[in-house]
Image 1 (cartoon, rainbow, N blue to C red):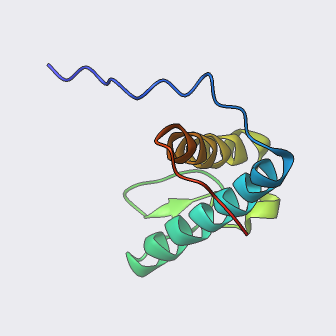
Image 2: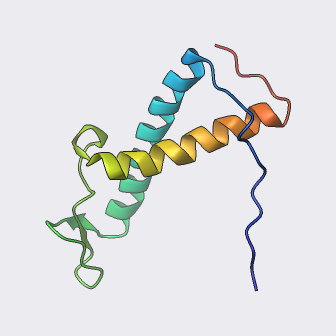
Length: 92
């Protein structure tokens, strides 16, 4: 049985600049996901329908509901925190 064991990043605080980067990463992650879906033949639809390959999330990031943005933000934030936790620095 698989038991996830992510590295604990709860002690990592992101600077305002890195937090801003998080939003850009979240938007890019959505665009990468959307491009992949479109390449697989998915189109916009008002409700998700796997058989028809339709999803309401094939819209620009700015038009996503906050719940969907939060999914992308969380992924980006945890990735940034892990990079810092592992001792790497992020510089402009």
